[in-house]
Image 1: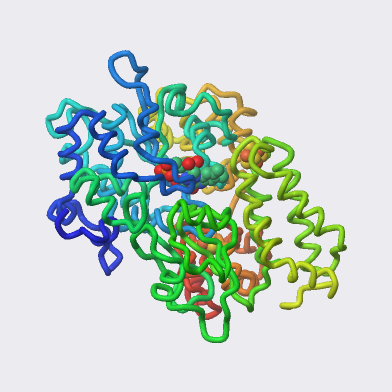
Image 2: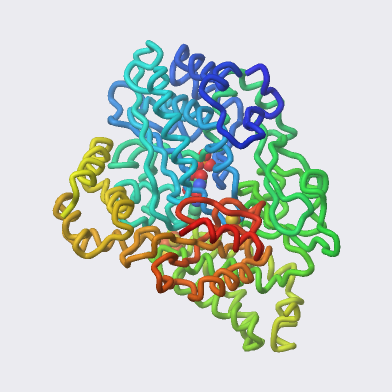
Length: 427
Length: 154
Ligand SMILES: Cc1cc2nc3c(=O)[nH]c(=O)nc-3n(C[C@H](O)[C@H](O)[C@H](O)COP(=O)(O)O)c2cc1C
Ligand code: SF4
Ligand code: FES
């Protein structure tokens, strides 16, 4: 797309907050990526996306092309196959997918059609969080327009390929974002995660091959197909391709969301884009990719924000939307708020998670109320190990203790003060 | 008993899935859109319509926080209590809304105008604190803005 070379995902967003219309989208080169895909074989599309080094933007960062390559293809593959867009965005501190769906719904739909074609899917669902009512209205309209113009439905653009696309409204609960829990929710069940293997690529929705993909990931596809893998790699300052939506909330001067090259430094985002800390506050730390990522602190400000470097620094790029902790905000209070969320949202399937997080939340509240004892520090440390990867049924619990384990490392003195001073020094 | 309209909307959803029960969450949300909540009676009619047991359907209903098994007011105000809003002072926002409406969180005002509920991150963290009333997002809240917002819902 000509006009969108540096910020392909966001350059068509209108300043008035209205969605890009289908006409505007087409004039800006929209649906060219889908046309290009339909002129290739599904395998060629997958190869192109693999070469572009697009990695999942939903939190785990799995390479997209590789994920598709596990789907059984060809005449003997089971059908119907499914593509599910994970539009459940509920990670506290995360506000990127909503912007993409509300502002440029056709980009998202085109991305879905391309991904579905690459795995020869017959049916696609958008699994949309229930609170996103405005996204729902705009997507419904855009889906109808896409059907009218033959970007969806039978025999898309005369290619012989057919795809039905439906919108599903979710009814709440953070765990629905976990891809196997999401599949249970979409089947009308309680959203408990499933055992893997079998992986969804082989046996997913209704037991059929299924790909679950984040909204932002899908929105990159039209541009990769239209402009090529080398162009996509060139957008980034790191080995993985593309731009990334980075967001900042908390007490910075200009909280917001920006599309930037993968690999910009944390300092650049916090100081140049977000304008630095508000008058009278100092930076203490940041959750770099939503509530379930480890804190980064001052010493990490110059790391490039990409999958590899954030991991090296002991955290995860996650959703790329950051929450800043300042010196006027109590770290223990913040942790209490986070663990309250996780304790509440645990799906209840396995005991270490539902019980351990409830216990963790209680201790943090006791610290805030001045009722904690020295032994509680040990218990908190124990919980972070007890809920580490491998000890629970899904990745929810390990994510839940990531902010806690890093806070115990970087803000140990603040926890200690709550115990010694029998209360919260910030109150 | 399901109304004609509810039944048609549910049928339209059923056409999108290979199995009838898959739409049970959609179906409950449809009933809720028409009646405000899912009563025991609605639940039983829905279960019958979808060839499920009532207990099975209630098991699904009770998992999801947006499915309401109790009546609510004419408007539902959901106040975000997740981390970015907490940092930006959502406790104060909650207290002010409760004070203005004269009820604690979780309750419905005597005149049936508002039900107040907490909600997790609304995806508006760069404009925290945030709340949602009947699916409409209100951001950058302070006491003044809350008063102005509440006035718009009769
Ligand atoms: C507890 C939990 C919640 C999640 N929530 C979301 C979510 O809201 N949106 C999302 O895209 N991915 C979420 N994920 C990640 C998904 O499981 C999955 O990895 C992702 O949707 C894959 O898409 P991607 O490869 O395009 O990133 C969550 C994972 C876990 C463990
Ligand atoms: S780790 Fe938590 S969310 Fe995941 S299955 Fe166990 S109880 Fe459920
Ligand atoms: S934390 Fe309140 S909107 Fe995200």
